[in-house]
Amino acid sequence: MSRVVVVVNKSWETEPLIGVLRSTNGRPAGFPAEVAAPSVSVTWNDGTNHQIPARAAFRAETTSAEVWCLKDLMDPTKSSSSSEEKARVLPSLTATGEAPNLVIAVGTASLPDLRSFNGCVAVGSSCFTFNPYSQSPNPDSNLTDGRFGKLIDEGDRTFTNSILTWLDREARPSIETKFVHTPLEPATPPLLIASTTAVALSDVNVTNPDDYVWADAKAVLAFKEAAPDRTVGSMETTHGVIRLCVPSPRFLFVSGITNRLGYFNVEVSPRSYAQNFAASHNAGITVAWLLSKTMI
Image 1 (tube, rainbow, N blue to C red):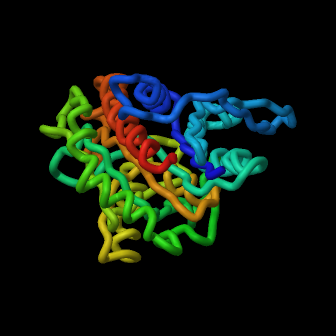
Image 2: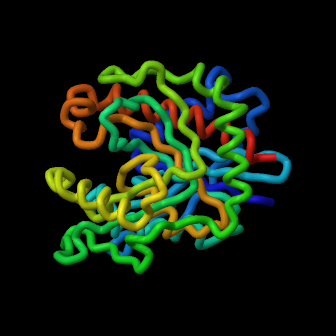
């Protein structure tokens, strides 16, 4: 049986998504049936073992899918922003059972554009991961990987390109009619942006939010230098970590856009719950259509 693994970064991103997947009004008709969720064993840093369940699981005739919240797996004594801790626990998802045929990374994100795309959803299959502390490591998160600073593409993009084309040309109307607007600086209307050339840009090891001011700028510059013919689909912290730590021949990222890059304090902070909920809900709508398409 083929296995799809959906990994959502934070709990407040996971909950709206799960709501959509369980809603007969949110998900497409004929959505796969929900089944008992599996668990994985995770060792925290004090040596204790914990059984962590997936948030939900679904099964079709030849395919199963699980939805995991990455924050659930992490040691609560560590920073929830620690890329190093995320990378430590993510391999637990593939330690047992069948290797996934498709991994879908989901979360909220910014977009480096003067126009507002708040509430839009970006979908793609490529990643670029950047460590702004390479010369001066962050002691609270020191994840390193030789693939940082390089464009990560699938060896064979035929499948994911076909899915992205389907999203863009066929599924778009059904998906966008279910999107909701963000309360702050919304895109009017919020759009599905599925692209075969867009890249998820992940700025890792940032545990102090004040550092995003300079770290994000360095990440964008490094990306433009390394991949001048590609565009940033979204910018956040974790899609790239998931891509590197949960091996799969096929990968998609789904980013609910909450704010323009550099505008977090004015476009998210004043109404963080509502802004994040709307973007996560719209990402959930997109994931529901992706699962209905990829699970047979």
